Length: 75
Image (cartoon, rainbow, N blue to C red; front, side, top):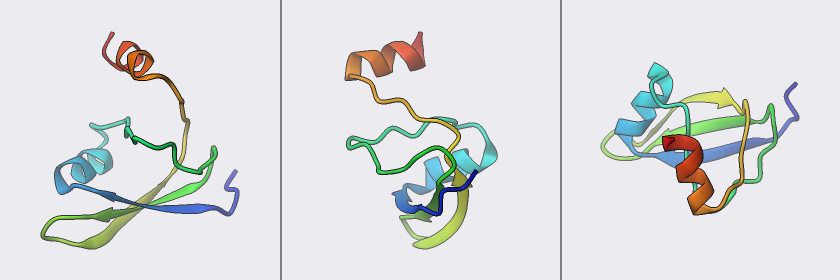
């Protein structure tokens, strides 16, 4: 289902580790990235490591107001 689009994102080490461990399932961004379902996201770990550490395919996205985000994630 890949669309041929890739996005490089920088994530802090703590959160990058959680994403690849499967304990962090949601990544919030202030500005909606230009990706679609099935696109490839390449993760750059900032901090001391400063390297590309992995990639994943976009499984889903939601664009909500701040209030809607908190309601969806925390309730």
